[in-house]
Image (cartoon, rainbow, N blue to C red; front, side, top):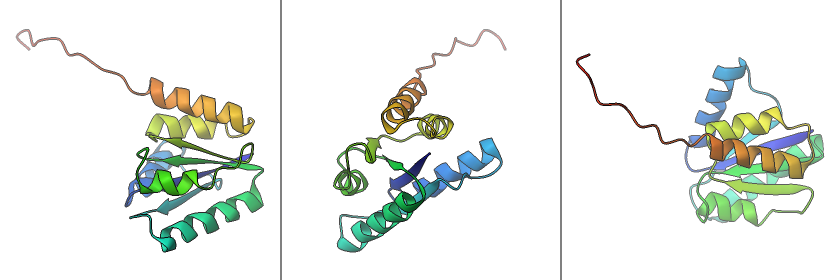
Length: 133
């Protein structure tokens, strides 16, 4: 089973976990959260320590970050280990739910399923003009 590490700005990671609790009723123990405010050494050390904690419990870890190129993503990308630690940026609720649904798959399959879920969760909905409602 894969662990999932959310590395995000401010409290976004905790908010995503609250969405998981809303859907599942509880948060699986495979998820950890690290908030990163900048690229400082303290933040990097926290993310690395949290990753190591997850790796002691899981074969591999998928790190989900919020914005590609920002501090959380840059910090996480430094920790990539092919086949053991992967990073996807642009996390959203559908991506996280899909990652949880496929966490027993290989890391490669998990990454693809999470990526697909995140992209399919982004939809442009056009509304019809009001007709006397």
